[in-house]
Every structure is written in structure tokens, then in C-alpha cells.
Image 1 (cartoon, rainbow, N blue to C red):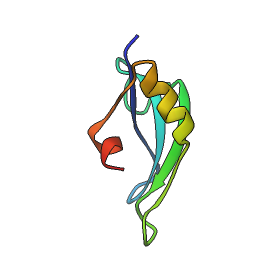
Image 2 (image 1 turned 180 degrees about the vertical axis):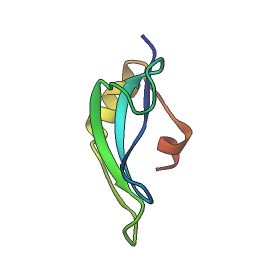
Image 3 (image 1 turned 135 degrees about the vertical axis):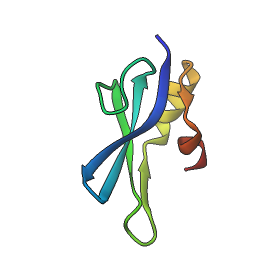
Image 4 (image 1 turned 90 degrees about the horizontal axis):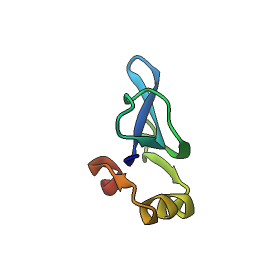
Length: 73
């Protein structure tokens, strides 16, 4: 089981809202995930980011790979 920490797009058309999730790499981007780790709202000024760093560090310690976007956040 290869786990990735990535964004899951939600919201309406032209109003994106993203959840940071831990999911198996074989699952589709909008599909089933293991755990929600935070959220990212790019529409607010400044962009609103809330991350549960304890859980993110746990998932990285057990072998999860963060996506490039998550690394930048």
C-alpha cells in the first residue's frame, strides 16, 4: 500500500476548495481516502491554509510521500 499526501478538489465550478488527504496512490484523485489532514482555500486573501501537522508528520514517518503541491504549502 503506497500512501500519498495530496489535495482533493471540492467546491463548485470556478470556486475551488481543497482538502489535504492521505490516500492510496492507486485511488483516483476525487475518490476514497484514508484520512483528512487539513484544508486549503486559495480564494481568500491571503489564502487560508489549515494543516494538522502532527498527523502529517505521522504519515510521513510511516512512509507516505507528499505531493509537490503539498511540499510547497
